[in-house]
Image (tube, rainbow, N blue to C red; front, top):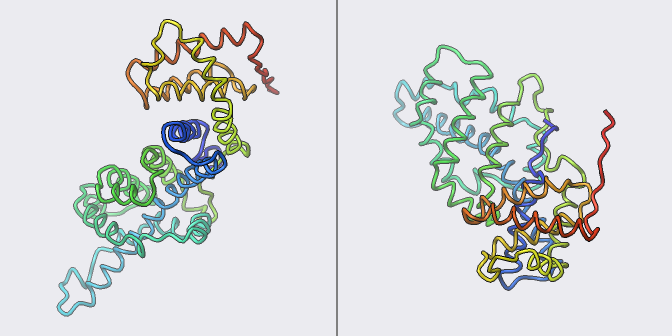
Length: 320
């Protein structure tokens, strides 16, 4: 699973955009403090990945405890005494519980759904019991390890998307998770799909970063945009002729500021990659007209910088 990572440069650009916007739009801390906040925001995204995987483990244990409690109540029914234990015997959940990467991370970060958020486990239990896929899974004549994975993929996807209680809890726990859930959930589902029974506890979860310099990329981009804000803003203003710059959305100005910082400070990133990334960001964070505006202004800026020999890009030669 090491060909992918949770924190990639697409996500880092989004995090930098959020942090620069906050820094410019509000009474904000010092630059050094803001850098620490950015790093913490990135770390929280990786925590969310691990905590959602842990939810599978803790929910399985919660249901197991409910089954055991039913067996020992004063007047147990036949179903209480002879329950269908297929779900708590799920082999994928057992492999995940034994996973060394997950155990190490949770041990270091001291998080537990059972201890901190038992109400989420209860809500998830009720959700699972009512889910059609769960009923089909429990009624099947037999199941495989792939079936065990697939039921959890389905339940996690639907519960995370639909649960209002989980959404409220996540927002309360960390302000940094508001925009992270969709991408983190996609990595959780990929992790479930890729896990194998034969690799057992030793199989690797997705790392935080794929490349060692990815964290440095985010910090450098953030600092460059803020330290050189006046210079880059002057360049942006110069290349927005024909636009009423005072009426341009503040988010669009922020996107352009960071895009210019990337153009000028990362010679190994091709111009078209930078332009496309910030055009895509504008689709998520600004107005319908923003992508065309961002594209046009960045095109002007690239031509300006090229004409004045200020845009240096290193050609990467393939060894293939």
